Amino acid sequence: PSLLVLHGPNLNLLGQREPGIYGTTTLAEINQRLQQEAQLHEFAVSFLQSNHEGVLVDAIQSAPDQHQGLIINAAAYTHTSVAIRDAIAAVGIPTVEVHLSNIYRREPFRHHSYIAPVVLGQISGFGVDSYILGLQALVRYLGQTQK
Ligand code: DQA
Image (cartoon, rainbow, N blue to C red; front, top):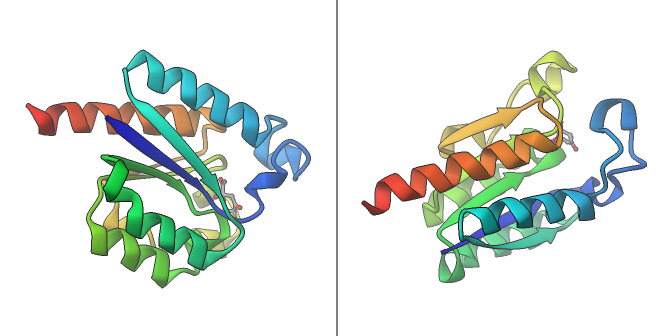
């Protein structure tokens, strides 16, 4: 089985971008940790980062061809993108929403997620561990639904 991890805009700058909020771990390091965690559970994992909404929509649309689950940090698009939400709803792939920061203790405009109503659940505020916990939750969910 295989998972897709999607990273939205500006997450390519992790490590140097507002380290007080997002930490000093780079995106490559996050992907490496996810790769290791997936391997423990005998899952394959693919990664895509894009600063472009349509590229993320395309990736979601084709995700079910190769993947059984999706982990997404839509970054700023979380708070703006009906298109990303509709893509997840359209393909119906089991999805976990993750955020490095706790979006609910930040500015009010970050408190609303367009994605949240179409995902299994959301993990927000644990830094890199949000991704790891998201992967673990998705693997468990997929294991239960396969049995
Ligand atoms: C983020 C939170 C968003 O509000 C922000 O726009 C991001 C990153 C996070 O991982 O904490 O770019 O999704």
